[in-house]
Length: 518
Image 1 (cartoon, rainbow, N blue to C red):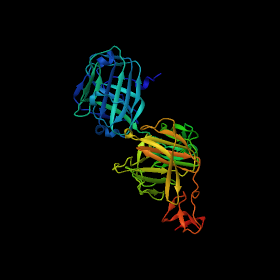
Image 2 (cartoon, rainbow, N blue to C red; image 1 turned 60 degrees about the vertical axis):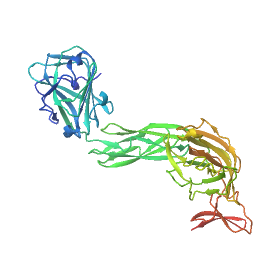
Image 3 (cartoon, rainbow, N blue to C red; image 1 turned 90 degrees about the vertical axis):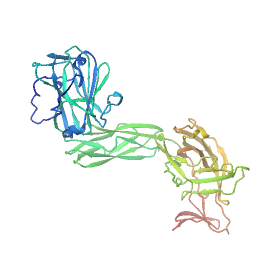
């Protein structure tokens, strides 16, 4: 049951004397304007449902910033009867940067219930003098700045008519009342606020939500949320997450000094494929719990090769262990034009771009097929994985030009050391859980022939993860005559004509050795 005594209403020549620790502020005390509809017409308040809001500008209540509102009072200047019976009243408060009501729409965001009154009677003994209508808040409201919203909703009952409220005409800020129809007035009632100093204990989190990027089952990702003591006294309490798949440390905070902060480390450790959600809750003595939503998505697949794609816009880097490879064909004959170029993880002239699709950073190919001047040639770009046959799993989506015939395909690929090029073989059949479409990630599975790598061919599409059960041996396909000059390969078996600083495989005299180039 709602408490009645904190919401006691009284009508007297002046406010009831405040407690010694409370202070008061009167807004528009010298105003002379009146309104019978704001805060609301007593006639309609007692004879039909009514909803009323007022926006008090931050500039006029600057003295309240950092204070806690305990009681509010309106001045009634014209009294038609001695009693007003009300069946119930709900009062909400909140803050907003909004100053008016476009299309006469009430503000609904960031409002909290501060008083809930059951049936009451507002009585007046002196019909010749103004009186104060007081509302003591069940839940004191901490005002931190911006425009103040006072929202009232009452239920019907019988009672007096035409009580008039003192206030000030406005040029910008307004009140909004609803009886049989919405009525907007550039008028704000005189308001007296009784307040106390804000609570000394307060804290804040640096984020209200943490969204982990795509993660593989069995792997771990971390994020940091900073907890700050924004009050004036030390804080202690507990930290927890209410969902499997997530954990947080430390699990407790002890004597966090005023003005100090501590980093909370949130771990994402998915044990199975799927979407994960939870809530990070920080419970500290003397203040309401602080919360932040936590979410993440996990995918499963073989563990030998695992790649999450998150390229930067026009990034020239190929993921570590992968190769980018381009082939060019004359359109007239389909013959190879001789300008095939290969690229490895040490640098690439291929241009990629990153795009957020369904919340994830994906590697999008900046070029589609056919390329410009397609009447002369076609160019195909492959992304070649560091695997050698076996099961593979990948995630893919199509981008916003899917109508042009976007697709995601996979082919077998074998590196030809003598020709210093990849030979692209047969297409690898992919089985999709759902056919790839725009803005939705689909999971495709397939099997690569033994001893081959996988070449991904994307047209107006993106990949966000790849996993396979076998990894290519860096020199399994490399051979040389005993008398041939020394040649160098990177650790993925790709020949390098002029090795830069790094670790390489050197093949000389039929013998392969690892060397460090400095």
